[in-house]
Length: 281
Length: 183
Image 1 (cartoon, helix red, strand yellow):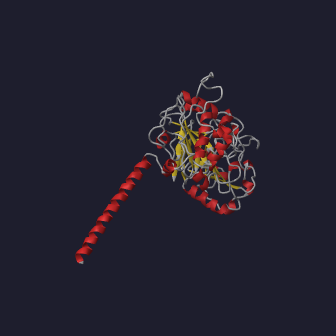
Image 2 (cartoon, chains in turn brown, yellow):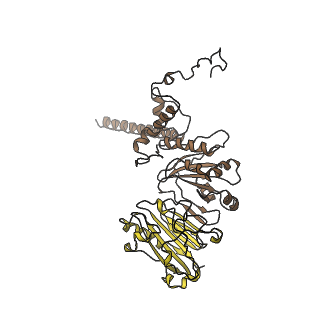
Image 3 (cartoon, one colour):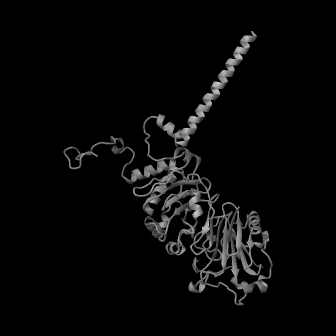
């Protein structure tokens, strides 16, 4: 009897070790998947039925990312998503500037520009005109960040800087957010950190990408009804993204029930077939 | 807490606060400085009085040539008058705006600036009528003082007169961390 109990204890012990080993292995797998940027949503999408397609963009569960446009340098390996650091530096005239971001209300768009960068010219120009008002969100502020006076000419920055936006010279901010190139943009929520990052060839492109990134992150930037800018439900179901998709479809003349919605993705339009001029797309 | 320092003025900022400490270019080159609060209180003894029309638009380059510090617990707009015009209009109930405006050193010995050291405020120091331009629900307070041979006007705006008590405590905590060096 005693031998049986001892044997049973040994078996239970071995099974316990086996279970712990399996749990650790499972945790390692999950950690590896997380490091690769694959979350539960992706796994669910892969396993779900029809109607969901990859958008070819790296996302996290609560944050989005501005896509790159052709001809603009890609960001580095280290993403700033979620990062939340205040920006301190000087203005082009030498005054001290501190932009409180951590804990601030509303959204902040940090525009990392350089006086000598040719791609940045459109942004310097746009920030000096009413175009800067196109930034998504009623209370989104635009802050231009150049490198510090030790790396940029304050007089050149002063000549380009507009009084429509705050301009701060701070090399530390570039380091804090691991900014790889200029121009580069970070959309930051005062409570959640960076929710979108990337670059664009023009201000109009960046505005469009920011709207999409914010919507994908569940942020309602242009809400007029006094509702919170984002809700838990927005974050969970991406309601704003759905509304945006509906708006864009409606603008293209595609309404619910339109035949285009049921056409095969690679259908050959009438007249574009082998007998037509254009051919299949 | 974050320290921001320039022109001999150092402010210790709580989380989420904005700050600008700047010395503006010569106002003679850019006339039309925005009006300050109760400018008639400033003696006309060779001291800047900032007596531009009240409807003068705030300008980044307008105002005193002496250092001006703006501290706020809300995002400061890029263009502001010395006493916060352009910024206070954006304030909400729990918002605080603090302007520290320096005057000529000679003013430090005048009666108006006779208070020594950085002042503190009480709840009763704030009044809706102390605002540069009255905004419903808001209130302001101002004090003139000298410190280390320098003359300053301290002007504070609160987003809510009714709920000012906790805001005054925040203001005094901020002022406790303020340091002003001799010129």
